[in-house]
Length: 221
Image (cartoon, rainbow, N blue to C red; front, side, top):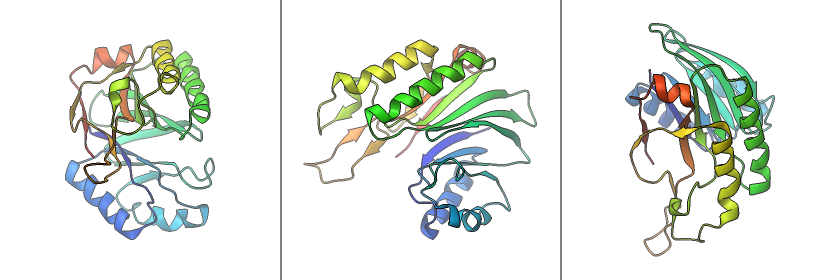
């Protein structure tokens, strides 16, 4: 089973819908957290119909007026039950229908500013208190984790790091082994003005890292 998260940025655009379908097919994705969809409630039904023939779709218009996190999955292969949804995360229970693989997964799309993200860190701490399964936390946190997670642009300041670092330590998450592209975001400017950041992350709790230690995160941009 292949699990992925992807910042699509405006899933209402036909070109992006086509690109997403190609991405799912090429990479044989079983479950996708689709981030920054920006779909207004009046467009949800129309956009969902583009995918519902082959995929089960969860959309978050009841939580976010302009969609932030959608889930798409192959219902014939995996069972997904959404348990908790908020303005910065969707938490679900996942079971592979052909194997013994089960876990909890939290898909994250963090807000842009430090104060806004504090509620995200609190929500993750609350989830940790009820966690009994292997737990994967994946997505765009919109936050660097160390001073080495940005090249060029404004130097990383300590106040950008401290809340994120404390949260990860408090709830006992560890990074998955990562391969692929070194950076998860760039501003796609010319060589003199280009900035690279790491703001997308994949973490597992102790149970995940014990049960599924062979699984890796592949990063593309």
